[in-house]
Length: 148
Image (cartoon, rainbow, N blue to C red):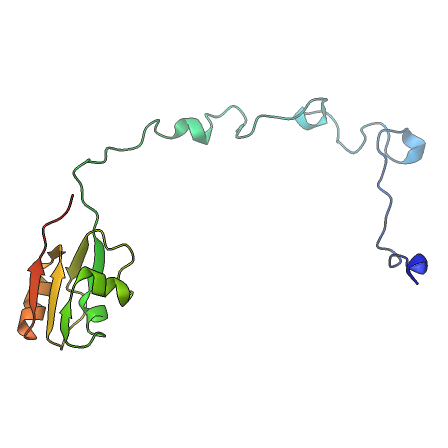
């Protein structure tokens, strides 16, 4: 019955009440040791305090580096992953459907791996080695003009 349920023996333990006199077993220093910063009242320190050393947050540079507003970040597709596709024509929308890219903002083909199928690709950029490998396999690469 619910009224007869009890916790397992030894699982519940009363906490030690420190600072209640020597006879209670936690008097005098009350478990804080003798002297020093940790034994004093109000011993709490600021988060990130490093003992007087200049804290990590102050050692870091104040501002981030410079990022050019004209920089372009490409989503990368390697030849090895393109080789899994069947021969044919592929646009960025097709590559997105095949889950080779996620966003499809700007796409660049890189020459990592090899390709054996005839692919016609329409992408924003391609490395020289990737272009050579695709044309060698009988395909072609059309470079689209970036929207940005």
